[in-house]
Length: 330
Image 1 (cartoon, rainbow, N blue to C red):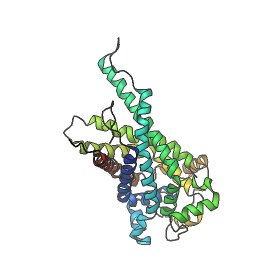
Image 2 (cartoon, one colour; image 1 turned 90 degrees about the horizontal axis):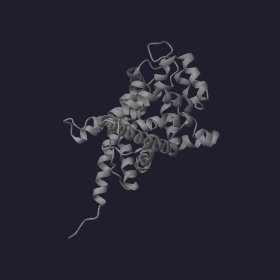
Image 3 (tube, rainbow, N blue to C red; image 1 turned 135 degrees about the vertical axis):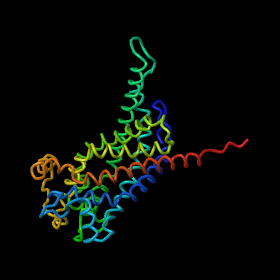
Image 4 (cartoon, rainbow, N blue to C red; image 1 turned 60 degrees about the horizontal axis):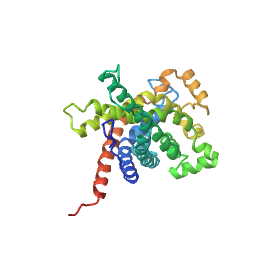
């Protein structure tokens, strides 16, 4: 994938990056889908996620047991079609966009790494490293924002399908999107996109910046290149999710604001259609811990998911590039 060298980037044709990104997204989503359903259920629960008389889910394991008992094992793949559509298209846009943006951003952030008067070699190296991180962060943020804009309706459909229990209103991804369109048009399809944009810019930036930085840290270890990429991908996913989880909780609450009927069996409804109102409601009813509901399954999901995404992308993009290189016959 992206070279760990701060001065070089391994670029692939846009179609190669798109196919490799889509394949990587498909593989990652197939692995983490059950964790996503558990995370969404916990994020949407207004009552405490603890031993409480009015709480439907009292913890991560209790949530898993309850879903399996009431809805069966197939419930852990609710919204999987929408999730796959979102993830495949998201990664198919994100990776080629990143590789296109990075050289452009580097034109504005790169500089001569030669030591100037009064500068020590260590200082110059720090400056160059920071500029590389800024370039990767900026390109990742732009790529993430573009991909989110293209795929957001699938994100809401995934949330709605995963949020409903035995009483189903949305029967499929297409039915969910059609229902939202009939209810409010484009506004319903992009409800909560503002908070998504606010989250995806730093998350998309951290996604690539942390991945590249960790790889550089591990360059002189005994780990193989594939192992370094795996560790870097895992770290990238965990850091991004841990830092920005509260924004994801707010987004999920806003996405199901119109989905009251399907959520009745689960307890209270957040009852706010604005970001400010949703934030105040969570703090008033649930306190700061309410912003971190579902964090454990989110981290469990993010670690292997991001690791698989980077590993599969790297393998597929290299394989396609090698397969399509013209053979030199002499």
